[in-house]
Amino acid sequence: YIKGTPGYMAPEQLSKKFGVLDRRTDVYALGAILYVILTRKSIRKWRSVEEFVSNTSKRQPIPPSQTGTDTHVPPALEAICMKALSFDMTERYHSVDGLLNDLVKFRAGYATEAENAGFLTHIRLLIKRHRSVCWTGLAAVVAVSCLTGYYILNLRAKSEQAIRAKNTAVDALNKYRDAESAKRKL
Image (cartoon, rainbow, N blue to C red; front, top):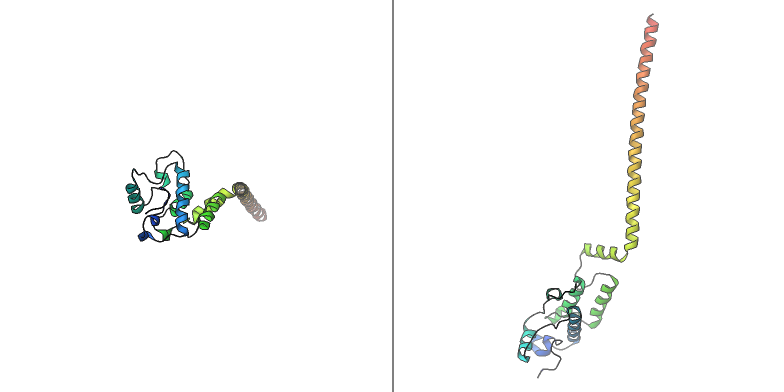
């Protein structure tokens, strides 16, 4: 005897060999609802109860981005959905609070637990969250770089001018000494 709504039932609802019913069973059902919201399709196709039981107890659902829908599913949201729908209950969120926390992080623009984000993802999300501050900082860096470049070029030009003036003065001094030396000889 199986009790539940097809398409929203976790594998452990079909057989005790997949585990006992607990909070993670509810996480699976919420993941199934999220899947339908993202794809506008059911997690699995079936024509009979036997086919539904067979499909649910044998394989992981297809990720939302691979269902052929015309909507873009953000990778972080897909990771949340697939973690909630994990066939192995130990890989799911341990409670609805964990799923909710990841959804809140996603909405706020932070990396989620489900996506195992790397350093570059954290930086990209930080920049996305603080876009105006980052643009202002970038503009400041560009302005300081341009001013520094101008200062260095100006300094170099003045240095070359000073070297030319020194060489002219040395040549004039040498001519003066030569003239003084010639005058003494006369």
